[in-house]
Amino acid sequence: MRWVLALLGWGTRLLRNILMLMQITGTRLLTGLGLCGALIYGGYSYRNHLKIQQYLDQKSAIAVHPKILEGDASDIGYIYSMRRDTPIHDDELNLVWFVVVPKTNAHYSCSYEEGFPHFRVGDSVTLIHTTSDEADDGYIVGLHDQERGKTTMVWNFNMDNDPPDLENAPGADE
Image (cartoon, rainbow, N blue to C red; front, side, top):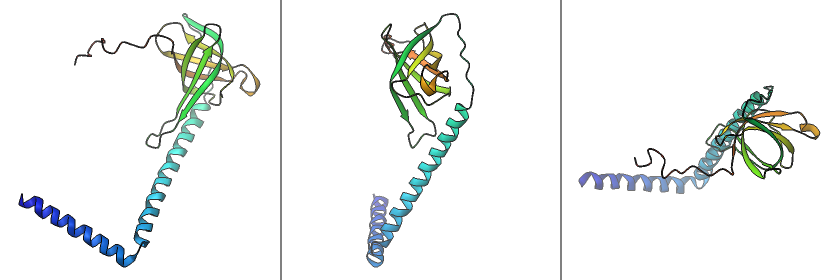
């Protein structure tokens, strides 16, 4: 119990000294600390932005040639939504296109792997994907305008399939 009181006394003295120092120096110290924090955060954000841009430049320079395997399908659709996340704490780009195939009304989520990264919402594309229920590598090929013939390798899965039953999965009891 004595050490707790000693620790509280030490903390109280430290706080009192900091407040006295702030009274003597005014708000300059607080402003300086705030400015230093802002500069550190800005530098960290800029460094992550440069790393992500370099990663994207490397991946987009790769020429992707679609390989259609047995059990793959090629459907014409369009990109109805997309998500591009670059969280501050991650050094990775999270680029996802959501593609719908009007003929079957199937919705696919396609995560960027390599190739052309500049597809936009509304672009007509050919989606080359596996016909199984499992997520797998696939391709998006642009059909119109500047995107015509541009190819991207993606990790895709059909979002209309039933989600996995995680409650009854093996190992769920552990």
